[in-house]
Length: 268
Image (tube, rainbow, N blue to C red):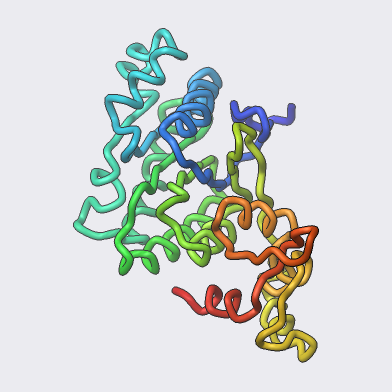
């Protein structure tokens, strides 16, 4: 393992590097525990300062109880100041609203203090269980800012989103503002890779392709091209109910209505 490589503690992810910013789509409290407990246990074991920003359905005391089962000497880590567990209101909306500049400064200070105290870096996770509709733009802009900020810092951060509270447009925002995403279906954890930046930059040209008529039913491949996503991501989101699809013919072939996708992309 190279010096900059860090063990994630998550089997499907493996090693990551400083500057990794990824996310998890979860549906249950157990989904969170299964990912976050080994994630933080590994950080503690590898001399990283850890910050867990909690929310429903796994708040501070419940998160601590879940972690102590895997980390027998958790109290020592807390006493030595190697891990901090906070309620989301103590972090994300400390000044009454989500302020990206304030939060980035706070992350930079936490990293600086961790390094000064001899830790190798900062490992963090935050849970976004619920958001008010009017707050989504602020949250999306914050994630974009974190993605830019983290690249040059000794920080690894995992953002957790309750999938049942997201519409498809919001889910696309989440994936596009992280390097990759974790999702779980029928007990199997999978990675959704982020699209390449050049795919996103050319997505407008693809949507204007004259061959794609407004009422045309698109195949999975065509829908993926239209949205600037990988075909596997489109399939997964369709199965999760995040993208509306139609089944045609005896074979039940999956199709997408272009106007539905256009409406999705226009949503804030």
